[in-house]
Length: 316
Image: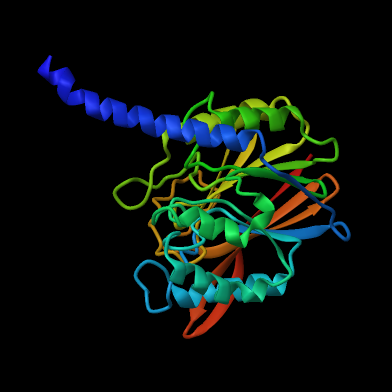
């Protein structure tokens, strides 16, 4: 009996936490926005990457300010249709100074459409974290997940910090989205922070969690049902990885500036280069066709150097 008395407070605390997550996601699921944009022409470019961890430039431990800014400026020069960020825009979402630095550094993106995804660092730091995030992205209407149509590309921006199970409101929303993919869609991009597949681990980075493994299984089941091709792009692991499972392309793009994690490459990996991989993913979408190039940043002294280190093509 004493054992259960000791456990009871912990069980109640866990119940309250899960109930709070459920209610928050339920509130979001009924009002998750669906944004819509049309490209000026086909083909069009867009960029996906993540894990900037923006903070004061004096902090070179958690993130590399030189490489972070080099990537931001390079992306600005691409003039993409949109930029999607797979989480950890800032180091600490509750820190006003980190967001002020974000505002300053991303001035180069003025006029660009940005699709942000919440990462674990964006929601840390107390009650001010989410208001800081939504203040910069009012189009999200205070929703932590949402959909966006950009020409023939459907973006499903998922909050992996709130996805607690197969029957959560967020998963119900995702199921509804896949049941109602617009006819004009050739490619469905599922963007989230935590990856469904990674060779990283908890000792030197982050392992994939069970809920993201389950999401991967869900996506692979959906791939059998829809005509468009599904691509998942995540972050959280500060490197670059690419895998294919069940017809779904999985990309880990966490090389936007955060301190890099080592990856133990496998013989059958699409990308095998060792060491840090600061980068962004450049996609070019045409009618029924998608081309991706991973643009890798390497510093030559104090000057940035760029090369395409991975690429692939998909057809509907």
